[in-house]
Figure 1: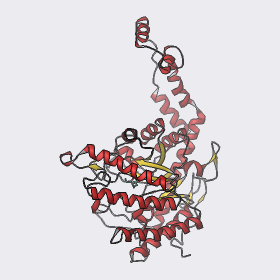
Figure 2: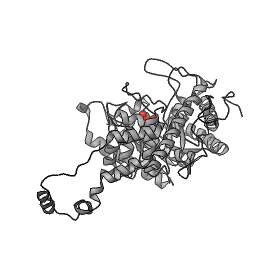
Figure 3: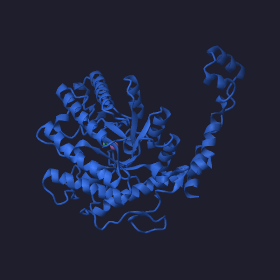
Figure 4: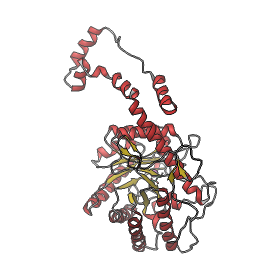
Length: 436
Ligand code: XUL
Ligand code: CO
């Protein structure tokens, strides 16, 4: 088989002292942490749309990296990309991947032709997945790029677009089932609005739920056994996206009785004005934690830069939440991340993944140490100890009346039992565990 990256070796763990840019310093796949191999904690996945498609285009400039692999015909480019992509994830030792339908195969003149092209590329995926022993973390449909989706897809004001989008997701689900996906993600690409002056919000939200019921029911009917995810994002491309953040999405899922989990992305959390840890905590508290799009934004920029995660502090708090949520089952850490535009050389694809994987591996190592250390968890437990007995227990049990609470308060006179929240003490512990 032709090598697309002949100069890149298989990436190995060399430990923190290594100065080899093409080696892991902290990610040691088989090393056991808290009774589980690192690779099974982290379940790394590469995003097809970035890793093999993103070529450095931005609002002000064309591509800086060539990812056509010497081909000009769109189907030949598409096939070369599949081979190159499997070589990349094989060399990096990444077990999973995710894609949009339109990342993997170009659109034809009609939907039928597009579907035929998709089938042809899916055949190649099936073959290479077997050869390399790789798995599809989730599939999805691109319902935002083509001009037909200018008003959204499931929330479009135009019923023809709703129908087209449903047909597209039907096909994407069929391909995902064929490739044995562990999940299927719905990201509301343009499901939002630009101005309320032209928007029927109630109908759009109801239609989005109709869209999700139709598509997820269909998936089940053809044997989809994985998890359905919704990926929140507050803005971009539309001014206001309906899937604003974890709490908004969970409210929506409840209202419309949809059985879906969340695929949370770090950069989307910060765009919503939350930390990534906050979004993960909301999902875990609500039993809706599913999967993660691992990346990071730049807090000085107001958009979705999709950078590879390098902030160990953030990664630690994220991994802490993931461990506390019971770890991944069907989900994983999907690098919805791309190297920066000036990092255009083929090597950069590898170096950026290595750095991102090492960051998440460090996060896992420190999060485990925090849990082993136990001081933070103990502090939180003790902080709420007043609910373990007496009046607190009766509040939690739901056996207390408001009259009894009044009697208790009157007898108490005033609250004399508040204690310090000790935020700085806890932040100090985090630093001590990280660098101690
Ligand atoms: C866009 C984004 C998407 C989804 C999949 O911000 O995160 O790539 O992850 O459609
Ligand atoms: Co994403």
